[in-house]
Image (cartoon, rainbow, N blue to C red; front, side, top):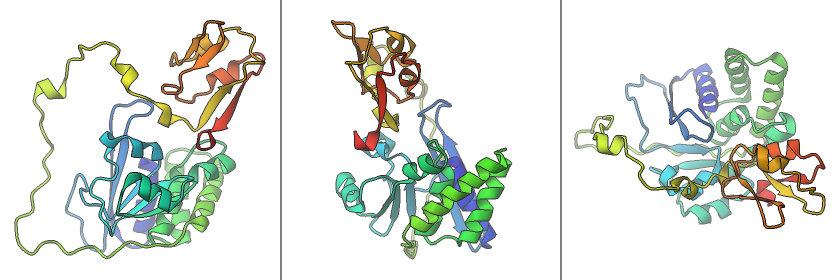
Length: 286
């Protein structure tokens, strides 16, 4: 998300606009929430911090829509644009998340898997965003992709493959455009952004209840779902022993059983299975 935001910002800058890009991290671990804010203007940008009323929100991980605590739709109005990496249609997503925002979907994950071989979404997601929101011409996006990916140290081969994925997303995206911003209220003093300072009892809570991690599911992290074919399984226990998340248990006949609520889709089990009794299925098709 950080890199996608930088590519979009760079493309806007190349188009002659002033831009501001500010990512915000949670805990430094896989699956931790990451958000990035992008502001652009023909004039100076003085505001900093959160964007509480965005003109557009871009969602790489549609599973976040099922987690209300993520608040990915916060601040969106009927004129806002919501771009989602998803195989679902705009109508399905609008009904599912009960939003009034204008929704546009594109299966960026399939583009990335097809051209890059991995779920590397940043560059194609930036292409999708630039085209759907009408932010930049393809020449600006292409230059931005090459500059930003070179800065993070990617090889020329990988940069060119990302460029191909970005162009496919750009070409496939419809042009929708941003709505005209609503005028600010004529009266009243605007409240400055203040970073909240929470009391220690809230900011550093003491976890005293047992087994609370079971309540936090991670099924939304998967791109592929591992599936055990029981007739091929020799009950060697390799998958059970090597699963880094402890998401594989043994049933009464010592066959492995996957806990899909907590499997993160790393596919170590598939890679290490000696009799090749484990296959993978794209999560959207599962």
